[in-house]
Length: 374
Image (cartoon, rainbow, N blue to C red; front, side, top):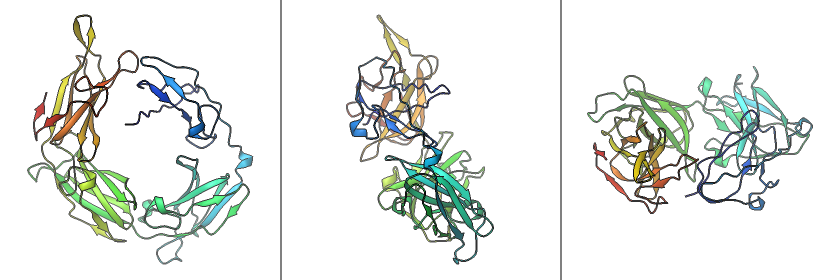
């Protein structure tokens, strides 16, 4: 497992990254809104040349600072413009949000956007040198969102290379009407509605399953997913009250074994229903050694449950300890689990059940259906 973590700087620019095990680290500083140039600690843009930070157990290293260079407005003088039309390629679509995202070497970040006028025209200004992807969001008007020069997925879109001062024109799009998926989520009896549920939508990009939409169930357990393009999808159903175990369509325990839902353009697929099984729980108590006694660890200590998918250990659910060190992880499907007890980031080092230092070396816990393992 990778030991990655992050933190946001406060109003004074200070940050603290907690709960790190001993090891060697590199730190990246990133401006969320692209106003500053990102860099790695050691004043470099390259991860491989960043300065190593060696962290011993139960220690705090301070002074890992950075001074980010401003992306000067004088260096952001390029423009991307074009026109957005309907499926016929001629009817203008006003009010469509068009955004340009820049590649910073590791991630895509939205740089600027514009809304189409009554003639479907837009112009995104103040762009700097770099590679951009342009997204057309028509969801508010019943059109499927898409990226420039593609109608399937973000991973295959055409990138637009810009040098400072360039005016890129003709970045047009002809949007199709959205497709939809709908259904109903019930409990194990097949009739009781899951009215506090969440449906996660994944789309196949050609290389992986990408989470593209999250929606909730209504009081009668029904749901509808809109703003979808033609493509192949899979769904996950979750009961947020944790009375029922999560599952993937159709009665699958993980994403890789779920049933495909193939959507054509401008269509609605109905009857994608789920009947969730009664959930199981894992419970216990977290303590710390204090001389010859065991003292309950303070409240809000995270405990994580990882479930074996058949291929890897996947984080399934989590819970925090109460004031007495007790925890109960609910909403679990039957299966094989391993449990992680996180440290507090200051005085206590985390571990896995049963006194293991890594997930792979921890003791597996067999969890039957609709039971509590404690």
